[in-house]
Image 1: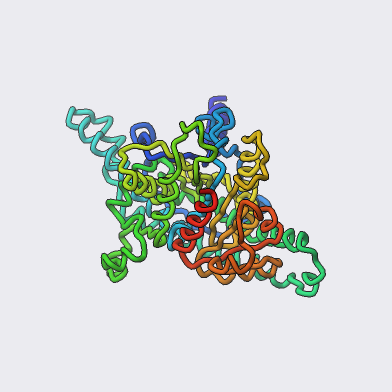
Image 2: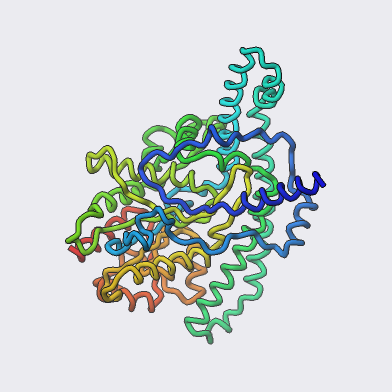
Length: 478
């Protein structure tokens, strides 16, 4: 009987651990540290991606666990419908994170960050244990020996080796899925399809391409390669990035500081996150021009910002993007404190390394944009088609295509030819944003719905082009 009860408790613990929401809202105030509550013990045994694990994933019908649809805004958010925060927040810039705000995908950095977070907690725990040992407590000394003897180098090597195997598994599955799609792709059929049918075909293809990622995400959870990462909050990750890496650095400043010329072996021991040049400046500028929420005579308070990503770590997004943007905003305004709220809609990894898929892929991103539009329309008693409600989405990959199409203005940033090719195969028109006036961009307040129906996506090389367009829209609203 005791063993049965213990088993039930264990299963319930797993259930609630996997039900953690990955939707957070970030403000430019410090997040309380949970280091004194959650102590991450080093995970010592090595687990590789074997055929046994792969077969187990196949037995689960290649489905990765995801939570039911989560609300956009928590009860404490100023945007929650009970607090009427959306009534005058009618212009939204929603951005992807990896590859859109950053130069490169940050996912490969997560096992390294998890190892650093584990070492940080191990060091704290060891120091506390030594203090007690000094008071002649042999019991505590024995229990904490694992922390005292924690081998960071060995742990890091194990995690990186496991993650490399996971990446290999993902690339294999993704390549197979892509090949199957292209083999079944019939150009003659597309010629006879309506625009609606082409878009639906694109959605089906995107869903098929998301499947390998969802399967391997479950493998990540099984491997515990990210064990310890979920215990680290935004402020702790900021500290790790400052201590062990080069964080929130743009390409231009990297060249000035000689970062790009560093020895590769030296960079192996760093966690390098480079934001695209102009990203922080653009996002901080539009937020600094937004007016405070207490102006009762103001019909619209300017731009609001949100991050929509399939990244597993909301604290990393907050630490490496949102907080630098909010610091830049404070610098522009000469303020020490502000209450800007930046929602982060993404997946979530807990302290045990289990990933919960709140945003499992392309269609989930589209649904969040649609949900935001519905919230904006529900928040206003006046005519919702007066042009004052607008959602701009910026992304860089095929995972963003459905959300780009759902937004009022969808912008593809970067040089991904495969993303553009997939959009064009689906009958979408992809044009350089600099040529917007040659193709009827016009007054966004008048032709917003018409432009959505024509299914045009815009392409840019960098954030400076987006900034120019946002300034132009600001001039339209006056």
